[in-house]
Length: 379
Ligand SMILES: Cc1ncc(COP(=O)(O)O)c(C=O)c1O
Image (cartoon, rainbow, N blue to C red; front, side):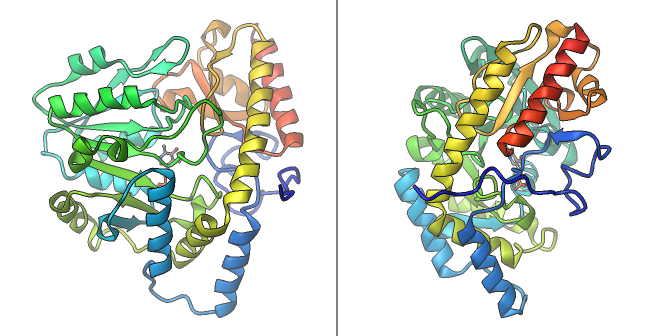
């Protein structure tokens, strides 16, 4: 295997990094979901070549990029998709909001929680209502279909699925996705399936299953959201895409952004194409590093009283339950101990925190040391 560098600590301060410039400089940030690793060399080379070209005009996806994506969907997701089903957008959150805007004005949007904060916002952003339904926590996090059924009203218009799930790291099984499919069919709902973390499955026993590919019966009611941004750490370049196989749905979805949503950044296309075309060896090495990091977080949490977590099968996110610490707001407590995790309240559970462990080992040492200090100080 080629030896990629996941150990150098890169100073991200003073780069406008949202992660590093939202708290005091002495607070170590582990909240937002981007990685502290440099993007793969193939991506950096492609970006350098694009910059050396020197012209940054209006851009559309090259035919090569479309082919690479279709090929990837066919081989990795077992999904034969037509080129016209792809809708490129500058962000998945944008796509989520656009999908919500398709619903009736009084519609309700169902969200299994805990959930990525913009899932909570898309309905109110578009004048609709969010309805949250707690997932259950046993051996693993699961969607509660009885509770989901009970939450459905005549106004319910959409379910937002996140697979792999942020923040719990669940990679849903086909059997679970079949339950989702039955649920959205039974209640005649639009399904948005956010699969941005699909390339980051860490558990060898787990796989990513794209619901619309695996269960074609629901493809017509599904908008699947994908991007290379988490995989290759290019979130700041703003390039993602939706797969909308139903032509009539796509015709409603596409014009909603006409004149409102900017085109995709040229460099976003370049980086996405290079990552997908040449980044696989780097991705494989990344997964190894993320597994090691995940195991270290698990070990630390297991060694401390008052905090628990379920091993994430995917993503680089650890969702840690802190309720036994008896704190009003655990996230704020950790910030006082110079560590800024994702605030559980934004996800729907203020007694949990989310730690992003996609960081070089030396930095992770410090993250875990500060986490430990915070836990011990609370008890
Ligand atoms: C589940 C999920 N969806 C979407 C996004 C963000 O997507 P984008 O930056 O393309 O809007 C994130 C980022 O953390 C995420 O975790």
